[in-house]
Image 1 (tube, rainbow, N blue to C red):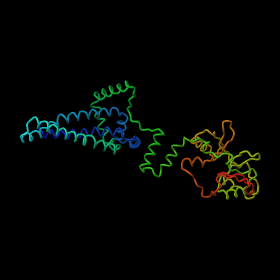
Image 2 (image 1 turned 90 degrees about the vertical axis):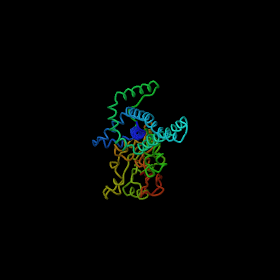
Image 3 (image 1 turned 135 degrees about the horizontal axis):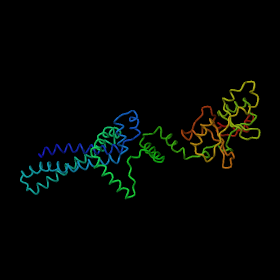
Length: 364
């Protein structure tokens, strides 16, 4: 083989090595969430990409086999050609053969190593990682084709490797994990925030991830802080309470000062004018959901959505009422403080017992 033919083979082998390196990192780095929508449309390349990602150990075995073969061929074909290209002119300069041969070998090894590491390894690796989703769509099909051709060899190598792992107490996987725990997602959000990727959304994402860290008892309104209205409240006095506090919902007491239910402003607005001076009928009260103090917030949200109640009674282990949970408080855990444009400053959980018309404590 001529020296220049050896150089030509070097280019071909570097390209082949780059293909296998890019394929290895593309299969490892691609995200199923980006590939699956394409696969659902019947895209052939996307379907092949998913198949490759689901058989990652086989794909890695093919890539490693290809990289190893290419590397060995580069050393055995390209290095001697480059070696000879340097050795001949060095000998022509009168340099003794042992010295010229050693210098030519070192120069050839340096050049081949540089080309192999740079263009056969680093460039394709960085490219595949940077555009992993596109790379796996491009490379998965030829990798699957090669897996059929080299099936006996690859499956034998994979079988031996898997059994070696099991002997070391490690269970091999055929698919790269694409799901994350809550803690891992929180870490991703924090890291993305540091790099400025999620400046606007990080707060909501973090709150959503921390939703399960809180119980109803953590965000409920305690009874001593709760604002309510008495049983003899009239539509007129109700509207005055709304005007002073800005609240649209009020927890109502019965004649025994027990928590009878709650009223929304629109319930009162539906009362005929002829009854505006009369106490509001208990039949107009909305029922409150019942929640355990130890219930997680997402469970409380599900109960309130299912029952359609925006106010819930919080019970302890003995089923005694220890607080009230408002739907707004649940939402605030997710999106942050909600400011009602009509709510008056200082009336958030203020006791109204001494206010005009005997309104005794108002809620949202």
